Length: 389
Image 1 (cartoon, rainbow, N blue to C red):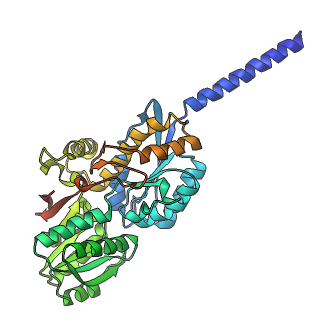
Image 2 (cartoon, rainbow, N blue to C red):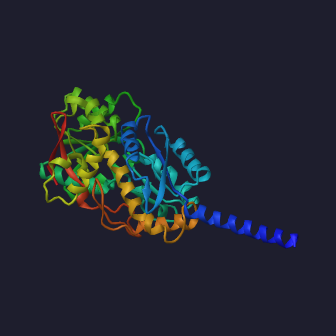
Image 3 (cartoon, rainbow, N blue to C red):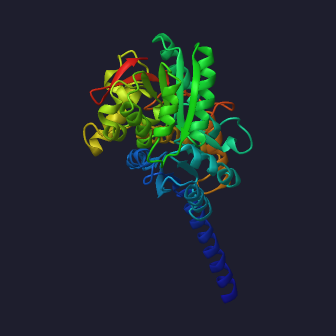
């Protein structure tokens, strides 16, 4: 009899343990790993992104959501190290990051091996194109460089620009912009008469500026991001360049304005709608969602603090908020089945309204933005002024 009771007790204990285990899986929280450039040369991008992560929902579809945020210090090796930690040790279900193109490109191998979807906050189309075995796991929220380059070249043509000088970073960001702007220039009757490059950490670009000016272009395009993009602008101003200076959407934050100051007065750039959300006409399809992010950010951090780069992190959150409930139908957080389903759900995202545009992802498009995600902005009195949609 004792043996029978012992067996029954053991079975009951086993069933209870199994039920507890099942309950544990059912209650498993969603883990989102985040690696951002909160320090280093790209800190003006990473800081508003980090601030925005704190605003993302802590519960989605009845599951608690944990955000594990790491700083990669604008360093490619550190970004890869962070990605390994988030996947191998923290067992995250998805990754947001990194802030810059070189870091995001370096992370592709790691997320593909770990079968973990990644939403990059960097701009280069090379992060998601062409979609292959690695890039099927990668998505991104910033506008493709090609989308912005076309807007810029079109605007230059309308303003009567014929010749352009180019100076960009000596990394993947500069490479992408040179490629995309060269293509856009050809379509809009622009001739690139000189091309120079510089490092994000350089303290002088005098030599490059003088070479560009010697080609006597109508305008110069600076393909940089964050505060390091101010260096060529101030140098050109100091050296007396009289032509028009254009920037990329990589400078669309107040830190750039602070560093560049009066030297960037009158410069033009393509940007996401969030940068001038208050100036958008009510008919703009992105105005409502852009203002929603602006309101949330400024409520937390103060009036006038909203930054375009934080908007990319917000948009990553909007995509995950839509995709997670769909993925939960196929598996529980912490499992490969859930990660695979989450990747598929992100790829199927349709009409997701973000701070920068309306996202429509597909098996052939992991950026998902169109012309609604760009406006032309001018720097006037150290502020952003809408010039065209």
